[in-house]
Amino acid sequence: MTGSDQTKARLLGAAATVLTLVAASQVAGAFAPRIPFLSIVSAVTQFFVDWPWTVILAVAGGGLAFRQWRRSRSRYVAVLMGIAAATAAGAIVITARIVTAIGGAGADVRVLGALNPIPLRPEPNPEDVTYLTDGGTPLVLSVFRPRTATAGARAPILFNVHGGGWTGGSRKDQTADWAWFAEHGWLVISADYALSSETRHLWNVVPGELGCALAWVATNAARYGGDPGRLALTGGSAGGNLAINAAYMANAGTLPSACGGPVPKVRAVSALVPGVTPAALYDGTMPFFGSGDRRLLHAYVGGSPAQYPDRYRFVSAEAHLSDQTPPTLLLAGGIDHIASTPSIDRFAEVAAARGVTIRLVHFPYGDHGFAAPPNGLGSQAYRQLTVNWFREHGLAP
Image (cartoon, rainbow, N blue to C red; front, side, top):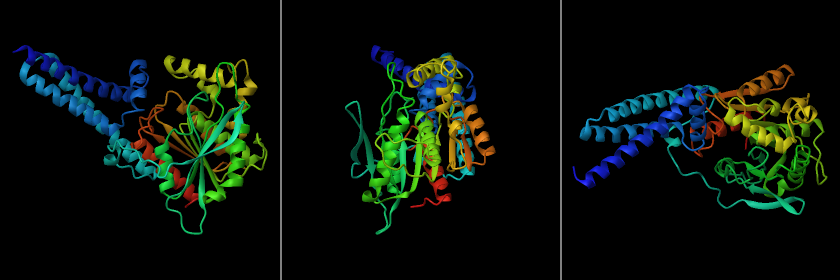
C-alpha cells in the first residue's frame, strides 16, 4: 500500500469513527439518560442533530467502516460496523416512537421534513420597535406580520418571550418558528428584556418590562393587523417560565407595566421545556447541568433557594395560579436534564387540581434542545401542538 493509500485509509477510518461515535453517543444517552457523559453528549447533540439525521450519520459511518473493512479486515473496523448498525437501529426505534407518540398527541410530524436543513425565513424582515429602555439600552421587540391575513380581519397575536437562562438569548432566537407562525396567519411579536448577570439580579424587574411590552401590544398591535383581544403567549426554557408567569399575572391583574398603560388579558399559553419551578432546577439532575443552572439562578435571583425562599417562590409558576389562569400547554422533554421534567409534571398536577385547563405532552427521548433544529421533529411538534391548542381556545387565524 502506497503512502497515499495509507493516508486515505486513515482518513476513511477517522471519518467512520467520528460519525459512528457521535451518533452512538446520542442514541446511548437517550436510552441511558442517567449516565453523565453519555447524557451530556446526547443533550448537546440534540440542539444540532435531529433523530432522522442521527440515522443517516450512523448509516454513513457504517458504510465508511465497511469500505475500510473490505481493505483491511481489521477487527476494530468490524466492531465499528457493529456499533454503527446498532446505533442506526436504535435511532430508527427512537424516531418511530417519537412519530407515534406525537402523532397520538395530535401533531403530524414528518420524518422527511426533518431532513430539510434550510429554515423558513421571514419575508419581508420583521419590523423592530423600541418599547422601553433599560439604563439607556433600548429594549426592542420584533413584529412579524401575518402573511396569509384575510382582508379586513385581524389576526390573533402570538407574543414570544425568548429563553437563554435569564442571562442570555435574544428576540431573534427561533426566527424560523416565528416565520412559520406568520406564514400561517399569526401576528408574531418577539421581545427582548433586560438580562441578568453576576451584578444585576433582575427577578423583580423583568416582569414589569414584559408588562410594558404587552401594554405596547394592546395599544399598537391593531396597526400591524393584530387583534389584542386574541393574545397568546409562548416561550421556551427560561422564556417559558417568564411567559407563564407574565400570562398568569396579567390575567390576575398583578403584572406591572414599567411604562404604564393597561396590560391585556391572555387567552392561552404554550410553553416549551419551561423552568416552571426554578428552585427545583437549582441542584439539577446531573453535576454538569446542575452547576450551570446554579450559576444562572444566582445571576437571576441573587442566590440560592435557602438564601431567598420568597424570591424563588415569586419566580415560580405555581405562585401565580388563580381562577383567571389561562389554558396552558406544556411541552416537556422525556429526559430533560435542565428544565427538570419531574418538576413540570408536578406543576401540571398542581395546576389541574386548582381547576386550570392544562395539557402536558412529553416528547420521547427529548432533552432540553430537542426542538432546536428548525425543521426537526421537535420543532414540528411544538408548532403544530401550539396551533392546535390555540385553535381549541378560540385563537384560530
